[in-house]
Amino acid sequence: MIVYCVEVSLIKGREKDFLNATEENHLNTRKETGNVRFDVLQQQDDPSRFFLYEVYKSDEAVKSHKETAHYLKWRETVAPWMASPRKGTCHLPHFPKDETKW
Image (cartoon, rainbow, N blue to C red; front, side, top):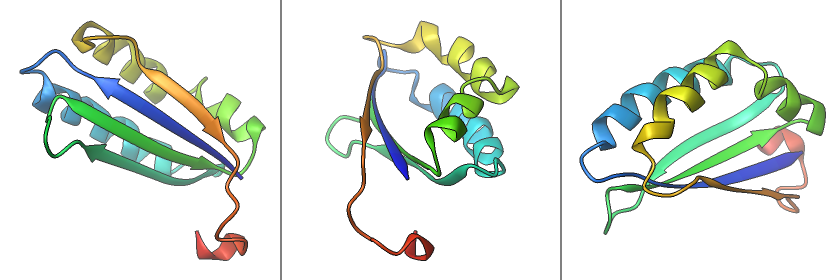
């Protein structure tokens, strides 16, 4: 399993636009065979900040995701709304150990 955590900081006022674009990406990503989980979180004390928590079965699944039409469309659509560049970090999960618990 591979976990990608992406920090997003938007230009204030673009939150609804971002959520609309991200919902389409989210729904299509969840249909990918290599995607296990995709959570979209909005910071409670600063609604212009979001955190994307994405779990994939493998590095190959991540690579495949980044080549999909829905991801490329999302990336292009949301780019002008960023207050700063998105920051993504890759993590190796330790728990739950049982992959069926994801």
